[in-house]
Image (cartoon, rainbow, N blue to C red; front, side, top):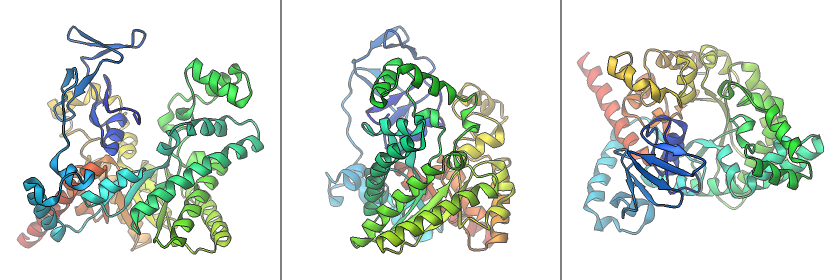
Length: 457
């Protein structure tokens, strides 16, 4: 996806992981084009009798879902030209003039804060240009796929000894420090909520023979050793498997490395005169003891780095509420966490027992029959998932009245979900950079609607 100009998939849908990541990257995406047949051997796709081979251009419309053979000339919107590309001056765009007026009006009335889901400086720059006030979710794993970095990540995962793993971690930490420096500099004093490693390890491993052979050569082992290790890490249900804080508990060196990278980067940037506000988020917590385990590592490593660098960094530690048990025991978790961020993508999956990436095959029918009013991965399910969110808000604030509460699932850019977030008392919503304008307007509309309801009571 990083190397792609656009994304077209035959499976999934608007709420699939591919669509989610594409939105964050600001890339055009059509997900779940069921009429498209992909022939992996022939390296071609066929749709309605038309076959397009690898290397031939196609054009896709992410708004309408249309796919065209050939290359169609496109141009950035005037808003993007003014705010992001800087190729157009504000005074040269009538569209921007009206946009700016509406956004300033929205900011006057909204009470919800606005953050972005981003892990690259250019994504952060775009989000700030659209009105974001910080990062609500930095997915650190996305940083591992740049260039040859993935080789060192794989060596870290496949290491047979502690010494081998430490050697690989020394390489990975260099990349992480560089990435976090870039984020802190771009944010210029705005908060950065950084999630520790979340996906299952097998997602980083090679699955094709050529990739395994290449890695085996670099690690000075045979290909079968790599294949056996990859097979050993395979999971029947990785979404509910060895991921999130479970990884940090099984491999504390990974958490230590990431936290050390965050604070070394923060110390360097702060020393250069730029304020930093790191918030470290532990994913997939369902038991308070899981959070306690990771928080001990975070505080210990943070103290070590601050002693080394002579820089005192103000930071917060919190967790994602993304499994039902996390919401149910939010009062216990709030004793340790300084903030909650509702990961409603996974909270919806775990509450409904429904796969986000596979639901495209039946959810449209559910909406058509009225079984659900809307796609619950696009607009929050107020009765099921919403009840758990309300429970966590009430329990969390009963323990810690000033606990900061936000949402970082893709629901953070959906107008109906934003209204829900306003009504239940969250402090901020976080969404993909290019959804920030919609979130700004929706937050203002939610505030005005709530004000009208209150005045009519």
